[in-house]
Image 1: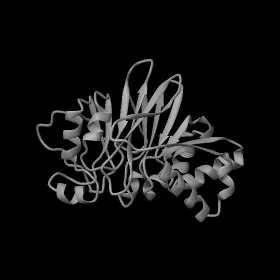
Image 2: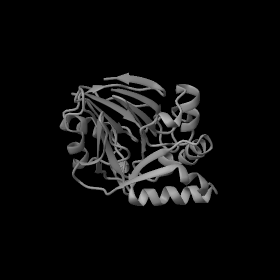
Image 3: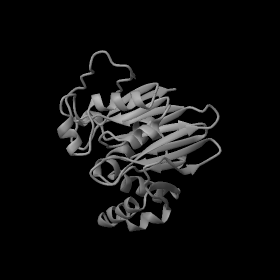
Length: 249
């Protein structure tokens, strides 16, 4: 499996981090998880990937830093005559349609197939191909959101992405025994109360979730802080990423 971190930041993070979007390659499948602003630019200029190469786009929730790249992607697909598959919660699908309507690009929806699913505290399978299985579970955010787990059938390897969340037992269940957990860390250690109030986590929270779920590696993303300070004596292997980095597991 291969992870390409197209963006690491949240809505008002350092702009050099780009907005959170993750490309996961599993067997013959390529999934784009979340579509922050500018993801079209990153896909075409940095990776030289066309939208028709994607198996699907998975959207975790409807905050702008996770969906505002979609209208451009839809327009790109529309003018090239390509088909786009988007997986999201039912209410998120409605929000996406309203967003596209607000920018007067309703015609582009003709090239989009929406796969809707419901949130659950237990991991539920939302999609499957010959190469991979995708599971989702609800997170602890200020709006309805899900974490995503992709399992590669041939190797049994798996990647979990928490999206935005305060610490949650649902995420522990979803991420159990994952090779990699990509966990948001909007705040540094010591700011747990403030982070949890807004449905976010600190680096200490992410480390604890990764430990409980017995994940091999933790990749922290969604920084709002200037820099991530790693606590001493951690029990988890950490990969500190940079934008456009490729990680093979």
